[in-house]
Image 1 (spheres, rainbow, N blue to C red):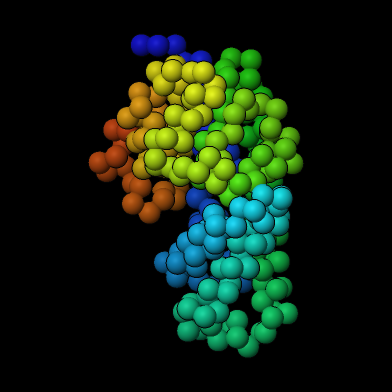
Image 2: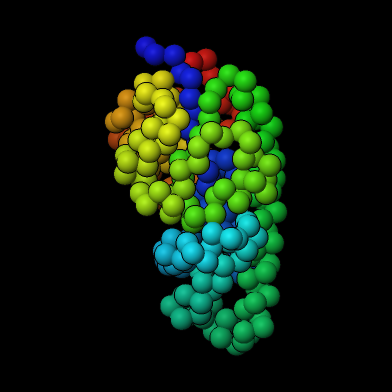
Length: 247
């Protein structure tokens, strides 16, 4: 078995906090005293995500706060028009100023949790830099380099494969191949660490990479252990465990 010299990380739900963004938005809505079920928020979340992926020219200049505000704003617009009846009534009655206040409360909560997650990851990644080359492979909005620089994480990574810039989205293997090519690394000498079996572990595993599944308490929809856990060579519960893996 080849020696692992390179680590590739997912970003959202992996380096910025141990939960999928949908679940973290859900917690931020509840912190803003907005009662909504995950299934009710999911279509609004997906709607805003699609808009974000299509607005790279605008989003590319955003830091984390502006990005989350952008996404939350589009989520609320979707919910105002197509959300559950009680929430549509609330968002309609409160008017644009009230919706703006809700967006700001959700944004503040989400960004606060993200800042804590990134600070923790910075400590963990710092313990790995002398042992590995490192990169990121992420479905993101074209501004991941800005996010990493703001979080003082950019210096640790030799490549950042942001899907909106590469033009390839996970689980397409091409985005992993692009990162490996830039790092001049063979798949068998690399490991992929991410919170999604379907998008991170399965495609990387097919390429011959070692795979590490960050299994959170809120697995992504359709991403449970049954059937797909064979794509994960190692399962961890926190990003800090990466430093303890004996490759």
